[in-house]
Length: 137
Image 1 (cartoon, one colour):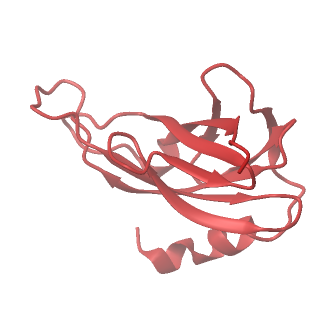
Image 2: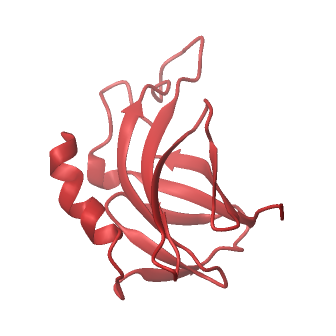
């Protein structure tokens, strides 16, 4: 997908919004956010938006691979102070954790995996995000 097509979504996610779904960040295993959506985390001063999968070279289901591969997702985070950051997280490479606003944001999983028939449709992707309180400096 071309970056210019993502611009409207990026602008919407960095502007205060009341439409984000609220989910509990303390759920074991994390919270799931679908591509093109934003969630508000309960008990945490954070909203997370899943913009796009920018790379998916993971080993396809049904294939035998030497390496598991990697997927990279582009995310946006913002807090109640209207501070907004964009960042990428990976499934098997660094970085897979990003610190923002006193929280550690990690990509725990990206589903679905590619198949031997090709990559999933962009609207089918869902990222499992884990948020933890960061260390005080």
